Length: 567
Ligand code: FES
Image 1: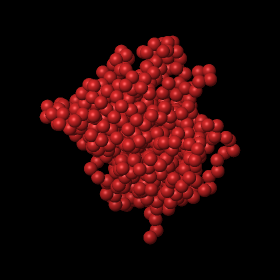
Image 2 (image 1 turned 120 degrees about the vertical axis):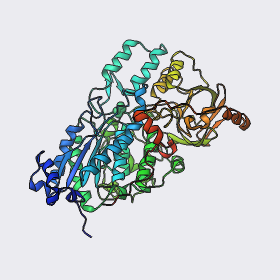
Image 3 (image 1 turned 45 degrees about the vertical axis):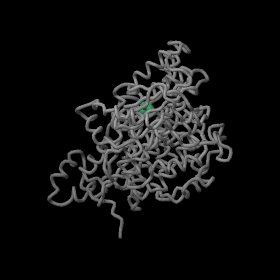
Image 4 (image 1 turned 180 degrees about the vertical axis):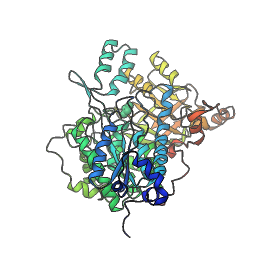
């Protein structure tokens, strides 16, 4: 059967009955010829609030050029951005994860309303990317993902700055280890250009995984936002959309178990953001692929870290770009037999075939990348834990010193702000396990990231002597001994709600264990006196989200099952 590129726009825009529909597009410049072409959308997550997605409307123009050259017609249709750097540590952070699902929903509503035949999604800041990828598999129309690109790193003399430095400097000033004047210099110098946060934090992690999943063009994740190569990838993504549509390849052909497997391997091999686990679970859910924390657990045990990118190492995304970008990582993993090369990509060919052809630039790896056989670190940067403190799982970020095991005394807080104050007042001491709860998907709601607290801990010089356990999330810029995504969360009666000050907590990445060292009878006694808290919000989006959202081990999704698609 011939592949249809005009998959459904004819139903909206052809025939006498649809004259009124056509008149709306004639009003924005459509000709008769335009109506004969496949109708494509360019969904730019766009906002001037912050540098991350500042330029995506500009990139959309280049994508449209590529679509036009390849024989289609394209219209730009923006979606929202929630900036995770600006809302960090504020009540606004509750909207961060929520915005991921809101973006996916808004794209579904917008593209399904107007009968487009395919689309290119342009993401930038953290949640815009998984939101777009979720919509790609949910709608299952021909689609290509394009990243808006990283900001360039700032410089203070010889020191390469990323935004992680500014967050940690706040903690260092509170601890008397840095002057306010130095902090101000960081603030001014850290973002010399627009684009996303510069390390392998959540945004750059998700962009990298776009390539590993096969949803974006190979090599398109690393060029900084301001480069000509980024604009060239935008044009090429427009052309690729028409190509992939002609081939009849849809996002659900691409996002299979094998593709998510490849993304998980890449995530662990680079010590990328723990948020990616949540997002990959959600993307798998939308695609109808069964991929669980158990799968992540198995993969995490066989992959070492081969990239020295921040926060695990000293380098920024622009440094990786200089030596060939994400394909250089993927090729190493592929050659070591760690990837599933048959996974199909948006380029119409399997990942292995693309990597066979790809040649690294003739520049040394300069300590930015390592070989699988001689890795940067012998273990993956993330582990999955279970135990009586997280019966349905938790995600551990391993600290820079590589300690896989930590035992300490619990210091519980029902609120992130209180925990932050305790760190800055010097109440958190070596050997403490700071527990921040009631900040899960339903509780906060929206699983806020704890970067302000984790950066304050590191800034106070406690990064390797204090651990943090939470039913919330971590920023990709977080480092230290961190356990998040604890499921079930406190707000639904998860055991994390029962922790009391001084309880012994055991974190063991090697054994995959998160244990509250308290007898079962005592926990039962505490449970009897526990009652669910009043929801934080009675109305608005936060209340709607809290009513719908599932737990972290299910990707904190809000849709009951994948959308059945029949085009
Ligand atoms: Fe947007 Fe970091 S705040 S990528």
